[in-house]
Length: 273
Image (cartoon, rainbow, N blue to C red; front, top):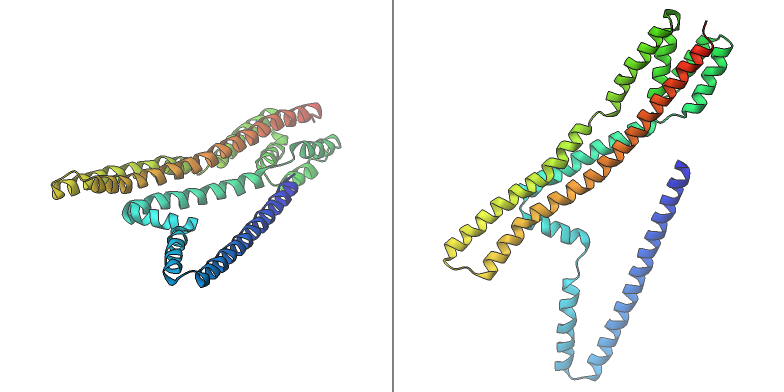
């Protein structure tokens, strides 16, 4: 399933890239056609009309900006002093999210296959082979089963205690760094609101210095002040989406751990020494 998703992602990326190339090529062709048409009209018309046509086309080309240019412009308008903390929240938060996604994907185990291998070895009385199977299998479920098998000589009661205790340890490892991600989710809009409040104060200071409520001064100051809130909310929304995904993934792994532990104890009880 993971290979299929990865293949579909690559195909989608290639399709999107080709589509952008085609659109860019079409835009260039249209632009060349328009330029040629303007040149022909300029040759046929008087010099004054050619100058007017060139003046009409120039503003349209000047207003076209890429997404990165617009983003950079808004970042500068919002003030680097208040936009930088919001950007740091996004960078550090996404780094923690990526680390958790990689860790949780590596912690995913085929529990049914593992239990079948353990049951086959336990049925034959080969507990050493069952422990070796758990040792060579990655994931918290295999670690829990290994701890239980390592105490099989101490009785099933001690095995159950070991499974329960080590299960709590593995759950804590799965939930590591989630509190930091939640912190950055809260900090990003907080920095944005703080920048907005300070920006509003500065806008009122400008009005006081001008001695008049000019629409230009008010609108410009409020726009710059609200940019920090906009960016802060965007960062919080992005991190919140990934945070909920991580919670769902952890709940799935915990459910596997609990169900697998119950089945594991049933296998040991069935083949009790």
